[in-house]
Length: 282
View 1 (cartoon, helix red, strand yellow):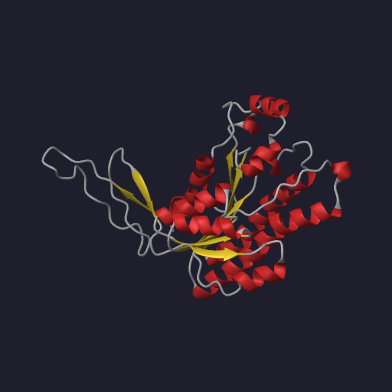
View 2 (view 1 turned 90 degrees about the horizontal axis):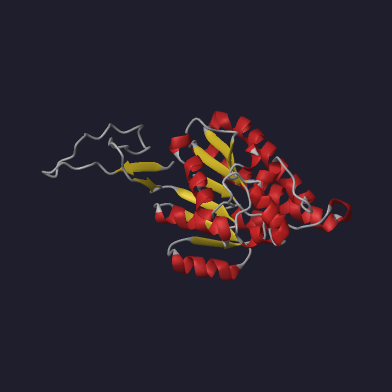
């Protein structure tokens, strides 16, 4: 899990003001005692798999994990995104596959090897009003947004259980698991399903020391988020519903993901973090 190294404040003679604490637990790193300090995440020695790693939240999550010392497996369906990501983060393991295809996913990830951390971020937002919703949009949405989460999580969790190690899984859901937007009937339904799938996974995997949580953001101005807020009038009205009068930044979501992957949330499972600028409070 994530370890934090705290930088000790120094006295004038260069010595530390306070002493380090003992290791939190064997194999889970040290936490050095200080007052106010900068905290640097450390995923050294851990292997993380991130789906939807080519763009937006997934890409920045993969980069953050890589920068924090993790060995990262980056999964996306667009090879060009993997090529550019590998240039930015040398050492990342690229896997190009359409997660909406069950057989192709099994072939690509079935032998992926040990994974300690999983971020299920891949998703599609296909806009259609309820009355115009089609089988093709419904099936594609559920195959990528829900079924792939189940399949990839099964592959990873089985590996964790067989190795007898603890692990953490974070599913990227949405605020629309709880409220709906016009034209997003199917998308909202997939995210509601992810919220319940997260709870079910947490209940069954908890005895194996595998935690499962979700992050539920409001609109994040990635390429996908811009589709939702493309109508200026709707975007303006929507923004006013947010007490903080802003949409979420990608960094806000990534920080919540890292927290849930870390031992700082060691007693948190089956829960979701709302990164919604207060929308549900309004």
